[in-house]
Amino acid sequence: KEKREKRKRRSSEGVLHIVKMRVLPTMVLKKPPSNPKAFLFDIDGTLCDSDPVHFECFQELIMQVPSVKNPSRKPIDHDFFRKHIAGGSNPIIFNNLYPDLSEEERERMWTEKEKEYRRRAITSLRRLNGLSELMSQIDAEKIPKIAVTNAPRENADMMLKALQLDVWFKELVVLGGECEHAKPHPQPYIDGLRLLGLDPIEDAKDCIVFEDSPSGATAAVAAGCFVVGVMTSQKAEHLLEVGVHMTVKDFEEFNSKRREYKSR
Image 1: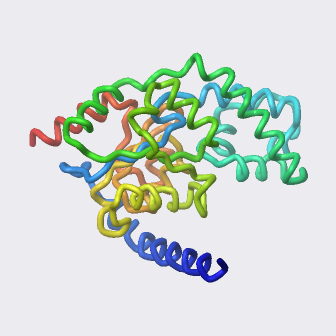
Image 2: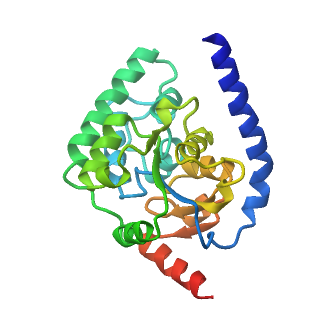
């Protein structure tokens, strides 16, 4: 078992080393691949604008249990949410907010927070504009697709069912928390490419990723993909800072840009 783990680690590190060497070249891509080999979607904040619900839950939590990042009981603002929370995995977020608590206490807090999120979100989530049209195009062109998320399994399942996307993605969902590393590490996207039967070194540049957070976008850029930053909760400048190749307000804008590029 130990030898298998070492081989897995060496394989992952080898891929990551090569991926890092490819980041700068992919930064200069000007348009999405005309014949993409795959579409990879983040879920939270990308397929739907779910961040307002997360924001409310975290705002209430931090008012009840002050964080070292916000020791007063004043409500956090969106800049605080963007800097310390958006797109992160729960272990990273809660370790950052509550480093003095035990691991068990932090896990209990995020478990309760996610339960409250699911309770509020299940009736309020809607597909982002243009997503249904893009889904039809992907199906018509028979392009593989996969969801890649840092969300806990219960959240991912709930969101996909609420958006009626569980059947569309089927079992093709990568959970960062179940990978060797979560985002912002590229591992979830490397694993996603492999699940689709693609080479994470040779094929990444021909794959399109949609991400809404700097953390997730950092992972996708490091994986070598063409990355579209979806501005549901982030300003374009924050996504461009981490290397996304294009920013759009929703899938409707992406579809329009894709048609424009194809017509040239």
